[in-house]
Image (cartoon, rainbow, N blue to C red; front, top):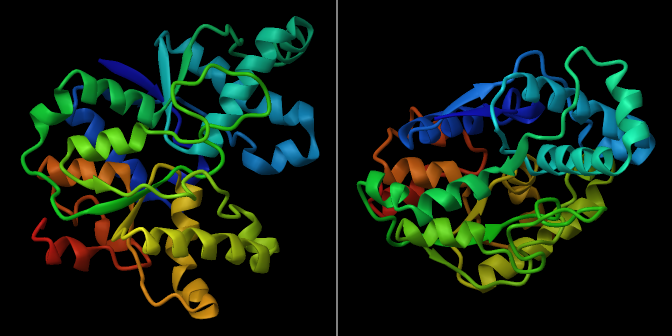
Amino acid sequence: MEMAYYPGCSLHASSQLYDIQCKMVFKNLGIELKEIEDWNCCGATAAAKTDDFLAIALPARNLGIAAATGLSEIVIPCSSCYSRTLVSQKRLSCDPALKDSINAELGQKIKGTIKVSNILEVLRTKVASGEIAEKAEKKLEGLKAACYYGCLLTRFPCDVDLTDDVENPQGMEIVCKSLGAETVDWSYKTDCCGASASVNDAEESQLLMSRIFKDAVARGANCFISTCPLCQFNLDAYQDEVGRKYGIQERLPVYFITELIGLSMGFDPIEMQVDRHLTDAMPLLKELKLI
């Protein structure tokens, strides 16, 4: 099975390990990810703040390229890229004049027929079919995960079809539990971590992150799980600084969902680059004898 794949800028830069892990895990599940050619930045959160037309047109070009592959579905691991692309597709479907205007400038025209999926939507089908359990070689016993969705995976500025609950999504919990990991019930799974505001408004971003860290620790989590490279980077890179500032003693590794699946499949953690996280992600796995 082949699926179109849009990695976005993060998976080709700060989160290259996530790109590698996605390809490894999906291949083992029988899905070959076909990265669309000559893709461009989706505009992420920046374009939507400054230019509404650009925020629609940038992901629209990628949709045109994806449609030209002839594949029926495109998977987008980054929550921000997924959100921008899904919103663009929805806006274009509701505004034929805008669609015609953008199509007039595109070499590969938008058709609006390709299904746009986030990584959890695909992985949940593999849990339901039993394929993830079939590929798993070991249970991830001892992991107590705070599944962190952030604010972009289930919240949208327009009405789109969702496959998970807006306020209390369960997709990550379903995948984690299928691997033998525990998940904690906590209050900040869809709160914003500050995303790119960590660059231009560090104080506010760190306040948001401190609330997330404190609640996860209070609920007994020993790790975070994320599907968003922006959220993962924020919680990973600033955890020590936020912990010192807000008196939080504990430090929790921040794994991508693909790392847990890969570990259960028996993949080499070094090959998956688990050792590249800024908050050391290896000691907990060694302590729990998962590697």
